[in-house]
Amino acid sequence: MERGRIFTLPNSISLSRLLLAFAFVVIDGPWQRTVLILSAATTDFLDGWLARRGNSSTVAGAIIDPFADRVFVLAAVSAYLIDGRLTTVQFFIFLSRDIATAVGFVVARFIPGLTASAFQARLLGKTVTVLQLALLLVVLIWPAAVWPLILMIGAISAVSIVDYTAALERARRAARSSTA
Image (cartoon, rainbow, N blue to C red):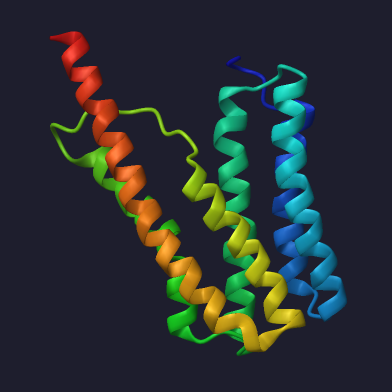
């Protein structure tokens, strides 16, 4: 993975989700928001595909992509909370994986004795992201399906948190045994 290059085409596409997040907050029409969600989902697929296909993956891109995903999702779900389309409980279930990831990051960085490990995307985490984007659409087009999808997101988020934690622990153990 290349270092130093920030403004590659895939990274610029990832950064476009920050503009989409802003637009989601200021535009409240259901069709406009649908287009914004579909655009965010498309850019999320396209940036990674282009980076892999063009062999232009960068360290910056590995940070920018998930950051842009989280900003878009947080902006959208917060707008729904403020609009009254989601309850506070639904909001926190929706974000449970993201909150656990943030707490885990802080713990891993600031607790003495924990060794740094590379953060890798995992299938369950990607599944949660897809379900979160789907829920953002469901809120607009099929509100009756919100609770079942929220519960699915919560369940897969819980499994995803355990999966990430176990993967990081295995990576830490491997790093310790290779230096011993």
